[in-house]
Length: 452
Image (cartoon, rainbow, N blue to C red; front, side, top):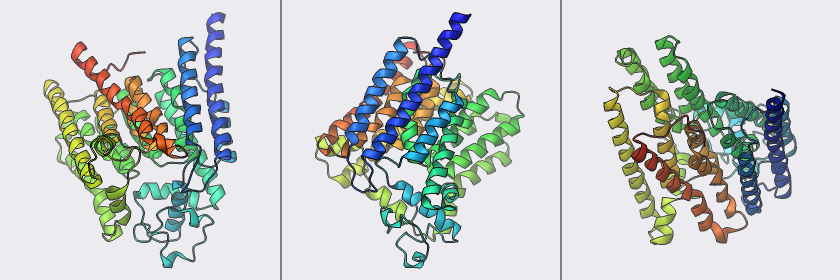
């Protein structure tokens, strides 16, 4: 027994040290390459750190030192506090808009109507206003995101940033507690730098939206004894909260419908609640913005970052950019049709019911395909595919999230941009290959109980 306790303690110490080392490295990199944007340098150094980190984690796993992820709360808190108190977001400027729009909301102005450069806002004091990117555009964030930003907007800029960093750190800890015992431990350790950089340090809102989804995916699978109506309403609340924080959460609604017992989902009240949830945010934003969606329109029409399929079209086939953008959405549409066919076949075989853990595969495929086909794969979007990948214990999916760090090759080493895109999106291809192999050769999808 003492021998076992010794090795368990050694495992925990290794995990805790990796968390601290990653945090300290991010602080150091943010100090060396500090910039308010839009020009940045040093992306290759962050990538090099992350590749060395991944190599070390794989080596430690093979030595049997990462068989648990029991992070000591003190070590976890120390890592978060070090980042919050001694670093600034690395290669980022979104945080300026986050806190500005939170302050704007608190001052009684509508972020959907007034861009940062609006003369009506000249009297609002904000020390970092000059650093807000695309200051002619209105917000692209749903209402709950703006309220979350408002928590930081109540304070001066530096204090607000620190508060949101600490709050995002608390969300990461909540995710760890939810995933404990449900994922392969070393897979979670692989994404320590990703979680620290994109969400603790850069305070990206996707973390909050994805946290609601992970609570839904992990809580209701173990809530078998809960009242059926309560389970269904809990799921609807979690998905609605995610949707009103970041629009991608709406993807979960069909899975909620088919995982709800047929005795409930046939009731008019439940169907009405689903329809209200689906339509509430679009109708609210159109109403509150008075049709002024300059931020949404500009982002959907022009933005390109770390693309996969889009880059193949423009780089290999010299497809004009506007035409390539159309082809990417057609490609993703066809991909979604293929997923829908697979899902409908499974639903038909299971009498039109789906367990929540059976939905992990389809949710992963939808979000992973979104990152591959559409022209924008910002690293912080990876949380959407990472959650189901971890729950499925699907290592290529975890790598597809972690290797999004290669997008930062654009900062200082732009001549290797295509290589960075390739090294990111090759994991989507590998992931699909592994999933197809498992489905065809074992007659099922990905096992949720494997332990690679």
